[in-house]
Length: 140
Ligand code: ATP
Ligand code: MG
Figure 1 (cartoon, rainbow, N blue to C red):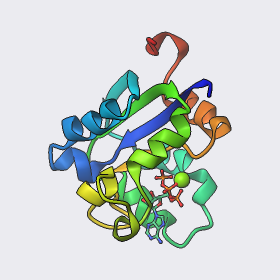
Figure 2: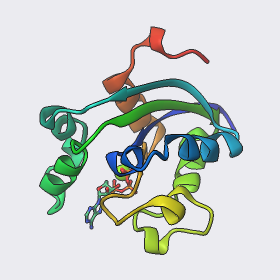
Figure 3: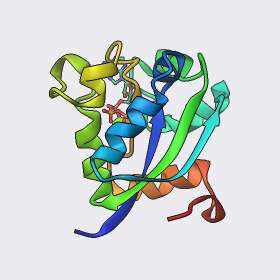
C-alpha cells in the first residue's frame, strides 16, 4: 500500500482534558508519523468553512460551536494507508460503537465531542491538509 498523508484534528473536548499526548501516542503506536502539527483556536467562520460538506446536517450548528469552544490541534499524519489506518485508530463516530482501544472508545465524551477528526478519503485528505498547512509546514 502506498504512503499517504491525512488530516487529523484533536478536538476541543480532548485538548481541554489535556489528552493531546495520549492521542498522539495512539497514532505513533499504530505507525503513523506526525509530520506537521499546530495548535489553533478556530473561529466560527473557519469551523463552518472546514465542515461545509455537513452544512445541511441537523448537527451542523452545534458541531461548529463545539469546535470553537477551545483550542484544537491540527496535524498531518503520514504512513502506509494513512487515511484508513487513522480512521481505524479513531474508531466509530459514536464512541458507544467504537472498538476497544480506539481513541473514541477510550476518550470521547459523546458522538459530537468525539475527540478527533480524520479525513475520510485521500481526495478529501488533500483538500483538508491544504485548508490548514502549506507545503513548507510539512516535514516528512
Ligand atoms: P470526522 O469527520 O470528525 O472525522 P466522522 O467521519 O466519523 O468524523 P462525520 O459523519 O463526518 O463523522 O461527522 C462529522 C462530525 O460531526 C463527527 O465527528 C461528530 O463530531 C459530528 N457528528 C456526526 N454525527 C453526529 C450526530 N448524530 N450528532 C451530533 N454530532 C454528530
Ligand atoms: Mg467525516
